[in-house]
Amino acid sequence: MHKLMLVDHDPDRSASLEVALFAAGYAHIIRVGQGENLLAAVRTHQPDIILIDMQSPDRDTLESLRNVSREMPKPIVFFAEQSDLETTRAAISAGVSAYIVDDLPGKRLKSVLEVAIARFQEHQKLKDELEDYKSRLQDRKDVDKAKGILMQHRNLTEEEAYQLLRKMAMDRNMKIGEAARNFVAAMALLGGKF
Image (cartoon, rainbow, N blue to C red; front, side, top):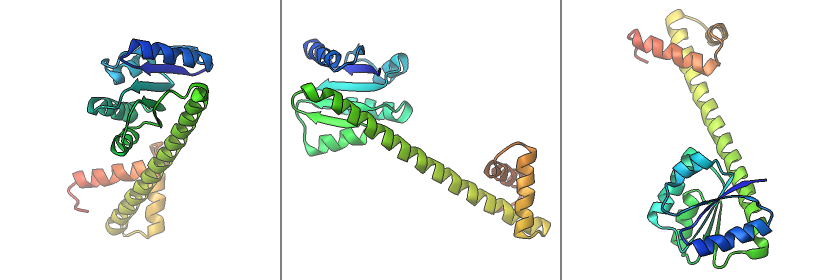
């Protein structure tokens, strides 16, 4: 079962949301006051989901959410009593997975949380894939640069330069992109201009 962190400065509202969460089958709930450092609380309690219940997100709350999303990404569900398009967009940009305006969803609470978790997981998957593609593209650029240096200074063909880089990587137990970056850095230290 998921561990939930409930952030709310209104103890009565927080208590009623906690009752609704228990009714929806969520038993592990950590209550945190709105004034607490959100990132520190997330580090301490390691929740699976963060629920925030407040009138409307203020600038400090949005910045706290941005920090959590950057450093310890989690599904974040925000229950707001009022909102406008700009505030909703700012909340989504800060990392909120679901932004619910008006009354708590009651019987739909569990499905709202499940959708938020699924949306967060899909977003994280896409983010990880993008980072992987960026890393592979950078590796390719570094390998091409290292091959160019080898071809120029050792009078090698492109295939010979690649094989030499591959051997360097295998000998040092590294990926070829990392070996290429190390080689280019070493050549730069030796005074080469590339």
